[in-house]
Amino acid sequence: MNQAYRGGKSASNKAVKHVKGDIVGHPRYIALGLMSGTSLDGVDAAFLETDGERIIRLGPSLCLDYSQADKAILESATQAALRWKFVGPRPNSFVAAEAVIHKSHIRAVKSLCEDHREWADQLTMIGFHGQTVLHHPPKAPFKGQTLQLGDGQVLASALDIPVWYDFRTADMAAGGQGAPLAPVYHQALVAYSKLDRPTAVLNIGGVGNVTLITKDGHIIASDTGPGNGPLDNWMSRNGMGAFDPDGKYAAAGIPHYPLVRRWLEREFFKQPAPRSADRYDFDVINDMDDLSLENGAATLAAFTTLAAVYTLNGMQEKPRSVIICGGGRHNKGMMWMLREHLEATVKVSEEVGWNSDAIEAQAFAYLAVRAKWKLPISYPTTTGVPKPMSGGKVAMP
Image (tube, rainbow, N blue to C red; front, top):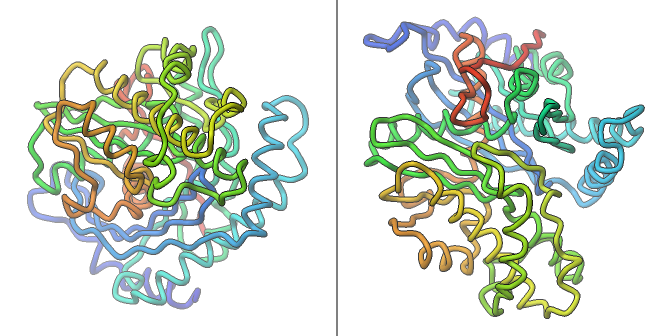
């Protein structure tokens, strides 16, 4: 596999060329992005051609599921991180978790490249998010802390290609939230697809986050609060698997709105946007002992949905359309509630030609190219950082 990458470097001059009319005069690159979300379902990998400003082409992608054994190792490390809280020595379980992360991400890259040689032969860099196991937003007067397990140098050495990684810590060191980071890519996607503005992109993953692209093209973003995380935990606790398939249990239940209203009074929702969250900031299922499986699922779906509506309604412009991506787009209960509560056209990402399963991986391919040119990846209106900031570190083979 390494020989293919060496060949890719020498052949990459065909891709690394100036495009007439580029905004910043940067060459276009073929990059590969890697993402593993807090839902711990697997690794997403995607090719992207970009100059760091525009999307030139959306490339092929894949999703590599974690085995049950690997998922258990990652879950153990996440629980250890929640107990650790950045105090004292790092938990020993992080070592096993990083071994899983490296193995899985290397396998995903090799598999995608073997299946798409025409892209692999021009591949010039990888953007690697890593696995978030703990995220503490800033709380005055203290700066926040975040930890994504995974060493970019391990991937760079194994794959024989430069790897950009550690995209969040510089933003947090400067006083930002460190999340969300996809908004600048959402802005590029909306431009690529020539969508009418104002448009919002709502991602419902383990945590929810939203990007508003205003009428004049600016971006405003924030985590919205809970995503699929609480509902996934509820299903698991009730012995019904790792998630609510297509939201059928949520759709069959009746939400307990007094609980939802109480949860929406939590400190997170009192903070001004942009704000960020850890998946486990919304671990509310101990409040639900008296609810049936279906009513509990419906209540948590309502919590996720109304948290997103609350965040969107607090933004300076009302979007004409809201595009839903992430696993939450499959939840029929959430989609019904979003359409009921938002005064906008609500679409899933596939309706506008986007592959939702690839968007976050594409975003980190895009951020890798921006990081190479030291272009901003976060802004005062997306993470609360004092000024637009680049970020990321590069590991060379």
